Picture 1 (cartoon, rainbow, N blue to C red):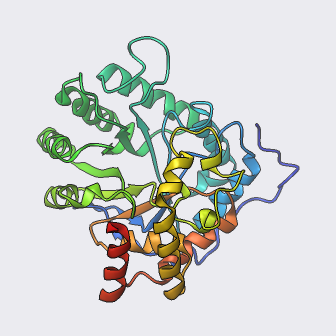
Picture 2 (cartoon, rainbow, N blue to C red):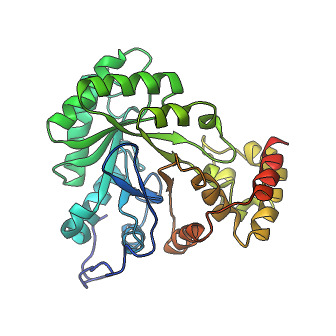
Length: 338
């Protein structure tokens, strides 16, 4: 879908005070500061979505100080369409703000037929990076990630490809995503030896998925690598959407592999208890879930999606209350461990 100048002919100009309210955190040992809340384009930016709505979400995000937009080659649907739509919006509204933005993309999942369109070979990663840049109309991305580990390709080859992409000027920084702790440590060591330190690890982390706490966060901290948490609201479970059951228009009610009705039903007693604790704090459950992640200084940023500007603004309000007292932490832990 093309952007129509007739629907919004006024040139977008970001608000002057866009950096006044956002909290920024240093990413590992780098010179990069990321907003405490970043915007992911996994959903709501593909061909099946309204591009004017997506455009408004991006503008509201940037006006609020969100400088980091996160994409991947397979975001859509269909694959590649989120990058293409972002490229249209970027050309229309954000070209003049390019130096104020951190734009990331990834490769690691199935993208095209044949043996070279998936996982972690040098062939796949460099080709995919080239394709992503073309779709977005960019000369470079700020961060290029390997999206998931490849059990068959030597880690040295995969990290070497990230190093090559940075040295070619196609990305400024290298990152990894979905890596278990041991592989993340090895990947960081390889990249350091190559002279392209790993900037960041994008890990799935929420109240309902706490694996990173066991050792990953310490490993990243020891190696000067930042951490950005994706799926911080557990695909919408950590919101008030399911307090009174499963709405028919919700993700859990649809045929989607990443959130089943049974998952929501199993977590519903905890969701209701956490909802009450959030109300006691003067927050919505979604806001408390984001604040809870950001209480740990080792979390550089949390990566949210947004289906509307109102939802985006609501989640940004989480930054107004990041502190937790010991009693609140204890009550939340009791619920999560029950």
